[in-house]
Length: 429
Image (tube, rainbow, N blue to C red; front, side, top):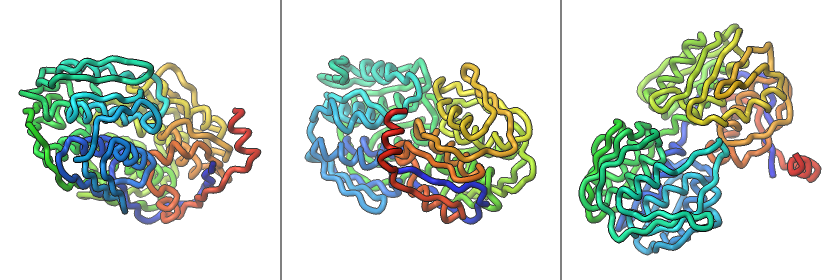
C-alpha cells in the first residue's frame, strides 16, 4: 500500500495534457463485444479500470492487446461465460457487460458491481430497459441473470435520467429486431462517444446527445478504429487546481463546451479563464476569490464528479458558499477529511455550507472514493505543510499519471510505501 505526499503552497505553471475519458472508456470497451471483427480504441487513459476491463474481456475468451493507450480487441472467440464474481465486482461500470453480452449472446450472468460508495445507485432503469426489449432478468445469489429468446425493439421511457441505463440499453438494442426509442435519455458527451463507436461499427443510431435516442436494429456489427474523447472530469480537476494554485496553467486536449458550467463558476469566482478550440488557460494568483453557490445537475449542468474538488477550492473563498448535490446524496464523505485540514464546512442534507478560511493545514487524510481523492489532492496543493493521502486505489481508478502531471506543473508530489504500522492503523480505523 502507498500514500501520496503533497507539500502544499507551490505555485503551478505550465501545461498539462488531458487523457482519454474514463467514463467513455468503461463503456466503449464492453461495446467491442458486439463486433464480429477487430475493434481498436485509441487514446485510453492509463487507469486501473481499463486494466480490469481488459482482463474481463480476456476472461470471456477475447483476444485483447493493450499498449500505450491503444486497445485492440478481437471479439470473435468470445463466449457467454458467466461472470458472477471476481474482477467484475471491483468496477461499477462492469454493468455495461450486461447490455453488450445480452446484445450479442442473448444471455449474460454478471455479478452486482462495486466501485465508489456514493449511496444507492440502483440499476432498476437498466433492468426496465432490458425487460422492455424482451429479456427475462432475475437476481440470483448476488448476480444478475439475463436471458432472451430474441430481443425486439421497444419504446422505453427512463423514469430517471441515467447515463448508465441510456448506454446499457443502447448496447442491448443495436442488434435487436426493429426500432428502439429511448425517451428521457441522458445527454452526456460520453453517450455521444459510445454512439459514435457503435455507428462506426455499423449501428443505426440517431439523437445521441438529445433526450430522445432512436435505434434501428441491425443484424451484425463490424470492427473499426475509434479515438476516445478527452476526459472532461480530469480537465475540470486540473482547471480547479489551476484556479486554486496556478499562475498560468494551460489545459491541453480538452473540449471547452463540455465544461461550460464549470468555466462559468470559475469566472464567477473572479478567476481569469480563457478558452480556444481544444485548450483552456487558467490564470490564477488572485488575492481574493469570491464565494459561489453550486448545484449539481445532469449534463449540461454542473457535474457531480467535480463537486468534491470544487469544495476544496471554495475553502479559499472570502465568504460563504453552498454546494448542493442533487445527483448523489451521499457524496460528502470528503468533508470530514477537509475538516481535519482546518476547513469550516457544515453538511445539511444534500448541501455543504463552506465558509472560507485563511489557510488549510496539512494532515493525514484518506480518500473514500475517486472524486473525494481528487478533492484531497486539490486541498493538499493549497494547504501549509505536507499532506499525506491514503486510499490511492480510488484515485488510480480515474486519474492517469497524476503525480507526473502535477510535478510538471511545479507541484511537490511523491508516493511512498506505507509502513507496517501505518497499514495497521488504516485497517483499524
